[in-house]
Image (cartoon, rainbow, N blue to C red; front, side, top):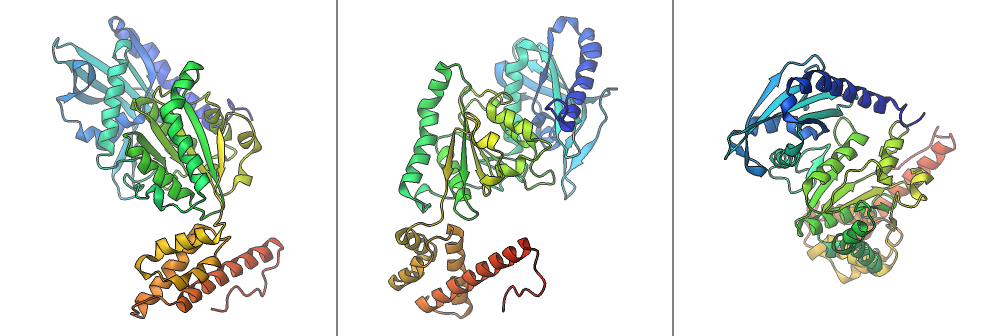
Length: 430
């Protein structure tokens, strides 16, 4: 099946064609003096929460003020609302007419916005029709709408609850090989400070893609969190693509993130966890086109996409091996040496740390960082439960042993299941 034949792509093109044809045949001819063009625009302008907040007069760029937003009838689009689980309206398809007035001349500009769904996941096609010389003003208006949609969120979250991703991790708090941390941070920093200019000189879009790969629990999410905090400190835009909502892992979210980045007018960091989940058969071609750069939006200030995966073997070799789709892959390892295990355990135990805990820490070499964290949390829970004043090495060792037994039982269970033999298998004595 070709990219053109993909059902979702066909639906998207069909929705665009129906709306676009109505605009071309009905709307534009009725306004020949306005030099109108049809433009693919961001869905944020029809966010119902944002529309409620748009209280005129509202200043935008170019000396214009937002004046009104009216719903109008159109034979090309059916009005359908979308809502969250708690009943809050989010988007409404249909046709809108936005009006703006110039504060000096009094001239009025009308922008037609038409939206329809093109998948059963709620992905939208949104087209705008406006004078060509008004496009820059409209982009600034979209940026203000996006700011209203995320008033307290320092990170723009796509596909999840605003504020669900909070950058709280400091770079120094991450316990990983020093050279790995150094290389990764230098890669990110050099792209924004030096690389963007190089991309421009080569007539390339300043769009770089990195992949963090490793088994679950090695610290990929912490790295993303720390890099987000680093980027925010430099006033970069940070976008987190979440698969936590009903739609799950869809190409439309990646597309939305790139669209927001292109309108940001500032350096942008996009974080995309579990890249492998987006490479399902229905949308793989679309994602590959984005990684190639052929379907990505241009952000003159530079966009860096950092993706993660727990299962690099699930990612097509067309992604991993073809030059340009991923500019660099970083392997995030389990804890490799006793000193690193000790530093991480000391960090999690805080004031409860004792020097004799080091012997237990050394046993955790080869485990992911998440295992060490769970050992510490379980041990501290036992201390709190028994109202103890300190954490003994014996109690810490007990915590380690119990969690290790659980992992061993899980691995044995999975091994037996792969062999087709689960009858009579005892998972745990507890």
